Length: 521
Image 1 (spheres, rainbow, N blue to C red):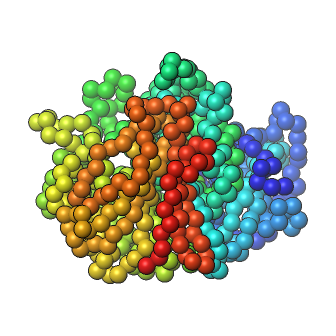
Image 2 (image 1 turned 60 degrees about the vertical axis):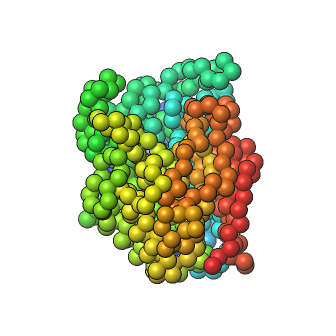
Image 3 (image 1 turned 90 degrees about the horizontal axis):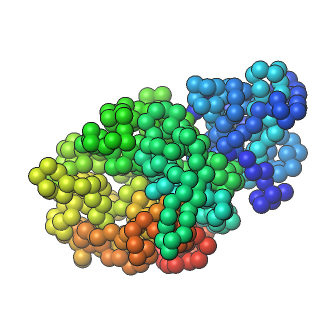
């Protein structure tokens, strides 16, 4: 059995942490297909470390999660574990957080569900695989992108579904980083829509995606919808994932200043209520390990992928102040973007990292204009870091200026930024000789996306930090459909001998549009 022959099917309830040991259980009964549970959303593997892996799955009914793992694809000596119940309380999602796994090895898992209503009737298993990094230097490959099922572009069976997920799977990456907008809760999906050149894009449609998400079930339904796609399910069973979120998991450009009073699509106008429901759905469906009991909803976290790479996942949504003109001259709550606590966590982790490369996975770019309409007086309001002025750092830019200064002061090198959000692909180089501040080291930022959404851009640039657009590819017209092929992901390869990092920006068909080899300092 190889990756192409794997079975294809898709914070939930109790996140059960189980050591990598054998547990005994009563034998299961394999019943007829009519009475057996199913896994309609397949499985997901997430947040893999040297000795841990989170295994996520979803049943079609109340059932007990059963997991087997082995280092042999034949499951010659499997370890069998009895996991948590999948119940209606968590939309029948459940997960097991395996611990004590051997580092530096390939692992294989089989997930089944044992029915609660028919004794021990067991589902057909869904099979997955993942690799735990070790301390030995070995080639590292990961892919990243963002923006799934946006602008009304959902699952189009005539086009082959969300094809870019299959393209990424075929690269056999060690992991995939989803840089936010994992769903588009604010974008209804219709059965048909006219696109460029008079063509028709045809979607599968469910009740939950036919309107903006407001109820908990509608938010959950967005994740269920994406996992209806066979490409997504196959990918999720073979490629470990790391998720972060941005705005569309709740509603477009949400912050403390978001006002839905004039949006007739929403019956629920309270953004805080929507955020609460959206957060619960995200944490139920993301293959994400909770930080700890004191902060179970924390999304920013760090992963070590051996001696060559440390990954820092930041959250640029949960701690920000209200979207504003972004021109504050001092740092306070109104100018927060990542917030003081997260910013210090990030700097401390970068300082302690002994890996050759430090990858900051961000849900928004640093030097691009991302507007959010206008304030009452006509002043431009901003959604991301940049504020439309090329002068000294103000507003949210002050956090980035502080971090860049500290990286130079503390001699922290080989930091590279990766992001999505703007629905096109680009390579940005930042240099103090072009910037309004001079006390930072040059660095790169790479942008890629969307995965299955409308294509936009390119965005205007903000020169505060000395950005140079080395490469970009974007559509000629905004909201170009996936039929145009302008769907993008990025691929990173780190060579264990030279320790060089090669970043490639790729399209839907795996064509390399741009490549840059970075040498470690």
